[in-house]
Length: 441
Image (cartoon, rainbow, N blue to C red; front, side, top):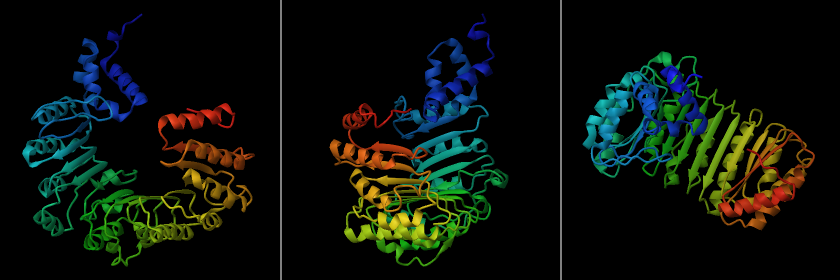
């Protein structure tokens, strides 16, 4: 029998990569070189000569302490260790495409950016956390022939001078990706994340974008929204997937927005807002082909704001009722609006996520008036419970729902909970013992 050492190194490396992906996927790859080198001399030799094992890296605190991937083993290195680690990874990766995320790329480590720019032709899936605009000016003028995803976060906006620099930055700039990278393929980027979204992608990229993510924090103003964000979305005629995170403090920034965005090819829309009812932004999006709507609101406790959130979501559903098939609406409201919702989605929506155990009974009541789920032959239901729900409430709510689902063999039922682990196990364990729930992988 041939021993492992007799197998070609390329085959051994491929086997290892498959094993890593089957276990933990990309997070494990970030620590793969360290782990494999410590196995034996054979694996060390393979690792040092296979660039694919060095193609994934996630660095924190490049200018000081450096940590490896937080989901796996942590790598703790002293001052300047991040630069040394980055140089090792780049040298060992050979010609492999790079999937790197570098956090806290500050002015103390401009050498780190220079190292990365030396390998710009291999940037595939890159992310940066920058301390200011200077580094962004370098990155945005870089030619990236094979890039699929680019995530850029800019911090340190406390200084008024820095903020003025951002505000006055020309919003027309070049992102010179190779156009051929975006033709005929599903594009994952470029994904721009800015505190103010002061970005306008030029014609070299925007006409080919199919996916775009935007995140707004407390520094967002109506000026930035009108002059940068809305024009950016208008430049993306083939956009299919849009994700927006709204976390500003002032709801009045939406008052000056009058533009209606028509996105004829948009198929999925994800929208998250916290503290304020920024769901009114949804009223400015016209998506006649929308198939999936995912709206999540958190910490909205004012009664008037809760009603506005519900009205905004129902408005979008009414406009897209003929095409919508997947609806997820996770919210903090305690309003019973299901009697308004179900007439809009019956016969079209095949997957619906319903929040809060205490609303399960209201949900069942609303559905029973429409033929006890008969109008949803392929409905998938997700019940999400929140902190504060007792074990008894969870069991009662799940029992009520399963009673309503009896006789619907094609219906898929999924239950998750935010209860503490021991209470969650108690809830699911009791339902399994009663034969009402079957464990599944």
